[in-house]
Amino acid sequence: MKTVKFKLISALLLLIIAFSLTNCIISKDDKKEYDQLKARCELESQNKSTVRQVFEAINARDFEKMRTFYAPEYKMTGPRLPNAKFRLT
Image (cartoon, rainbow, N blue to C red; front, top):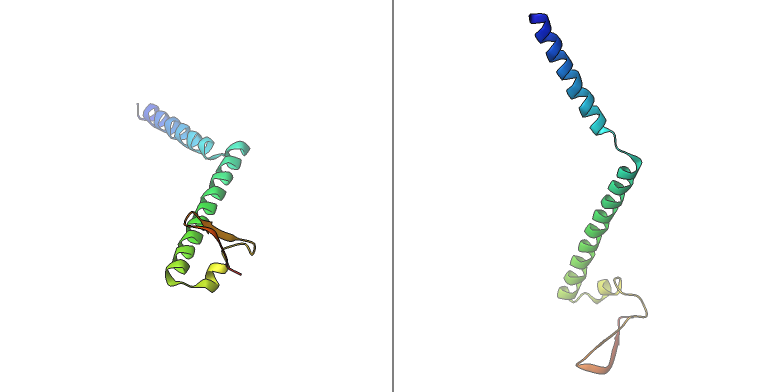
């Protein structure tokens, strides 16, 4: 009777281990999707950091740092300033 229980427990353990190992294997498609999600998360993190730096520069009125965030040909206009064009360069 003890050997039957031992064999049954051993078989169950082997099944659990085999199932665990098969779930650990990632297909190429899953890995590609994971890598794309990871890259998107990294990009979002960089974007958040850049936006924080822009607002910090604006609040500190640090025009030198603000210039680093805009293209040289950038011109700022607005509805209250229809004829005015501000250049950061």
